[in-house]
Amino acid sequence: MAMLLDQYVVELGQLWWLTNQEIQEAAAAHPEQVQKARAASGLPDHEARPGFRVGIVVFAAEDSPSFSVEYQLDEHTVQVVQVHRGHEFLPWPALLQMGRKNLRCVDWAALSPEVLKGSGGGNMSDFALSRSVRRGEIIDFFVSHSSSDSPARKWKAFQLVAEDFYEKNGRYPTFWIDKFCINQKQIADGLRVLPVNVMSCRKMLCLSGKTYHARLWCAWELCVPLSFMSMQMAVKQIVVVPLVESALVALTVFDSSEARCYDPNEEHRLRRVIEAIGQQRFEIKIRALGQLLLDRHVNGDSLFMATGSGLELEPESEVEARQSGTDGLTGSTRPTGAPRPTPPTEQVDGEPMIQVMF
Image (cartoon, rainbow, N blue to C red; front, side, top):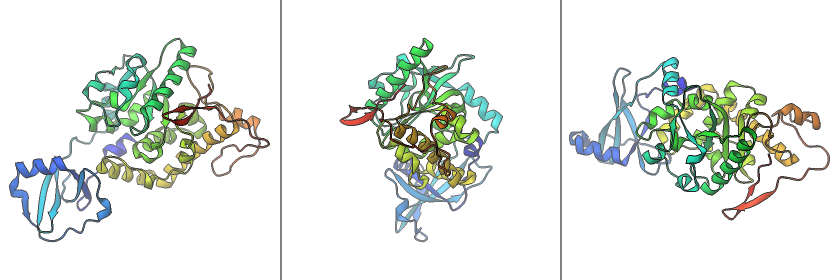
């Protein structure tokens, strides 16, 4: 999957979004590339994104380190902006090597409510809180989350997970978290090896809040383990902590066409890859996972079982042994008889948050 992302090709005539800063810098550096418009570009209005201006790729060659994007300033003027590709294509072994070389984690002791605040990406001070993974060390949790979800709820979830992990293992866990473990000066390199980071961790910790299902990168992260293992195996590897009661329901009706990335160019690249692996297949896997977890919540079953090393989802076979009836579409179990009590909730940020039952 890392190679699918890395082999994305910019094509002549495709849309490309430019930041306002890119446009201003290009105009200052190359004023000769601001020209009288030859014809209206006819770019669709619905492609506009806050902070970006959409243009069209007018020159792209595989052996060129850059490509040209024509952006229409107004009905009379166009500007051509040179965009550097940023990196060369790498074969899978090279991507794997790069991912392992740059693999980092953050210790539980380095986290606090303060460092989790802020909805934007990380900065170099955040990056300094992480460390290189030691030889032979395996990161405990890859954290999949939406930066727009409540930091207070995330902190509560981290506390629950960390304390339970300590009780079972005698130590606190390590985490891979994007804002701490991706060098903000090399974000593109960090994203291109994201599947390597996912598979380098023992488990995935999914902090599913109000906006999680609407973030395409979050869905992509979930899709990585779901693409390489069966659903029964995946639910043992993916630890889902719903930050709001509606989070699991949102996963059961996941629609990739409604999910977005902040950077529209990243979104376009992800959508091309999703189309290559099959959009319907991609969505069905995520919906099935959400349905399985929702069924367990409705039944009053603990989403997590405190068995073995660390946190593990209860094996699907044990749930099926206690229940009768299945859903042929998702393979998940359905309750029979009187419903069991649902897990308790508590107030965080003025709204109910499910208390994870370990």
